[in-house]
Image 1 (cartoon, rainbow, N blue to C red):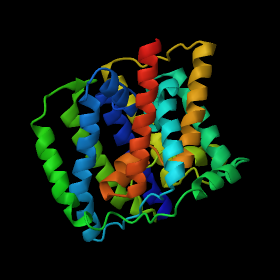
Image 2: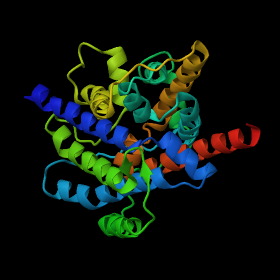
Image 3: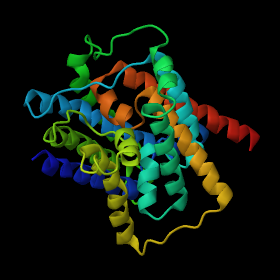
Image 4: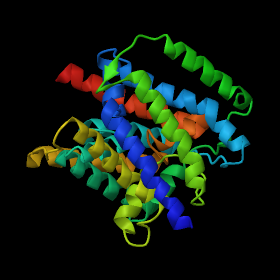
Length: 316
């Protein structure tokens, strides 16, 4: 029964990949153009997806369809890992989920980034750098990671206010879809991830790194796990979306460009492991729960992306 329920991971991942392809939903370009061009189109979609979950996910918990699980808080790891992840998105050509969905549209550069991300994260999660990750994450003050208890009851109200404010924001498109359509669709996929993954004895929303690591380190034993099927579903959904427009062809990439994408992927994997999550696991799953660790990590990821983008703008 658990294995059958795990197939819902493929469904959720495919939905995420389809929407991401249609809405060009990737926080690498989303954060970068927000800083360099003051273009907030993709960021608005991201915030809308978070706000929708702030309203609905507590109702999922109240109905007993899932239970809240908060991403861990490692202050030093969140800051250092977040900065590294944010900077590495530029060289990888996408965020953690972004490189997965771009793989579905035929990008060989994305394949190099996915491989680098898997190796980088696995080295810290189960490989020779486990001790380094533990040292970084244990450094600094010990802070509880429960939701902000004073604000938690106000989360749904804050989500409604954000939705209201965004609904009157300027329209715009990223990819084939408007940012509103993309944000609502990503938010809906994120909401469904909670009860569907709970059917597989996994009380958490969407996350990219666990499945990416398991696919590399335990491809046979964990092939039917919810997390692995989720990440495999992302390129599948993206392929279906891209195929609706026309034939999907494999994009050519030079050895130098592939090496750059691979190095960027390594940075994504190492950064996500240190921070205990990425723009999906923290941003689209932990932030709607007001998890302090997730908010700290996302601010750090944005800062890393902003620093890299501004440096390139001034020195490019």
